[in-house]
Length: 249
Image (cartoon, rainbow, N blue to C red; front, side):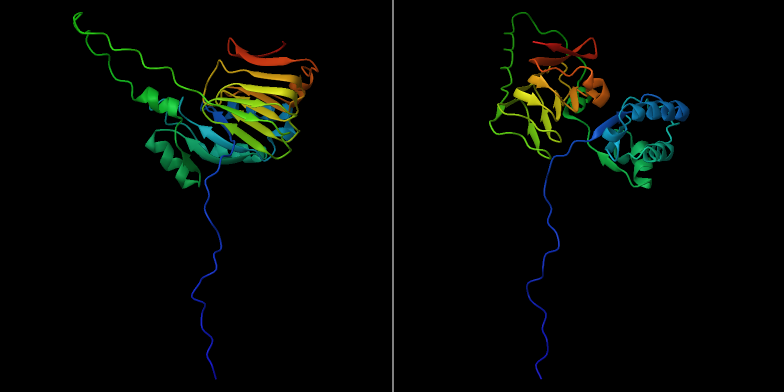
């Protein structure tokens, strides 16, 4: 009687892929748990459905190395109580890494801009006047991503290193992300995040502002606050003195 043999080719159960996802970054500037809980509750009240089940990265970079009072378990518990999902932390301090790993949080790498600041060295002494001046580096070339088809609900488009130009409508539930500016020659009904790498000079331009969220360099306006600023005329969104401004073109 023939015996059954195992197939030499094992069935694959998964595959790994690199992908891009947008997380909300919560930058901690105080370790006072009462103040944190109060501010978080007030924020959620402004747009409860928008933040529901949102993935959160806790940024601890503004805390000093001498500050040992940050209580990550308490912060995580407060976030979960508001139906937010903490997924990781951002910090260059080993003590924060250890605390995060003990409660199952991921350690996310710091942005390139932060790494560049950390590598700045002391200025070198002035060179002799006889030495030829070093020519200034050529300006960095920024690419532009052009989309000519409507952006559907659930789609996410990222213009890495440059501007995003869309010549079609943007549907509710979609997400536009750009390191530079975002230009939409049609109505904007989804989310638009410009200057995501910290470019405070980035702007969002659209023919009709009906967005769920607009953001410049991490500063954003959502839902109810945006409804009051909805306009059917060409509009621009930009930062001025650290606050988002929405004005007609």
